[in-house]
Length: 103
Image (cartoon, rainbow, N blue to C red):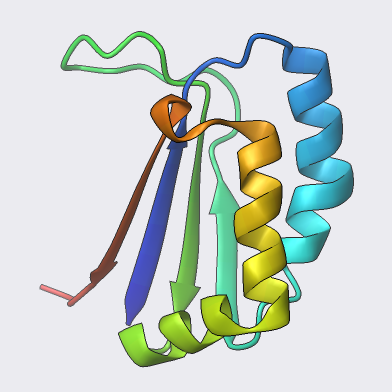
């Protein structure tokens, strides 16, 4: 399974972020071809390593890295990437993509 983890810093305008995230970005991302699961953090985030400026964490799951790359190469994927820049500039977000394995 492949996973994308997105870590957003606290936005300058929380109300705008919340409205745009839930009314525009999430519905768009849920249309990604091959998306198996989309989960987000709910409530306060606590860091055990001192990272205080984390506002929201999202995880998107795909069957494989190839499926994920294909999804983000699609028109919907390109629209998601462009829309994410409305929510957070590159220096205000961390994005990780990786394969997972059960232990």
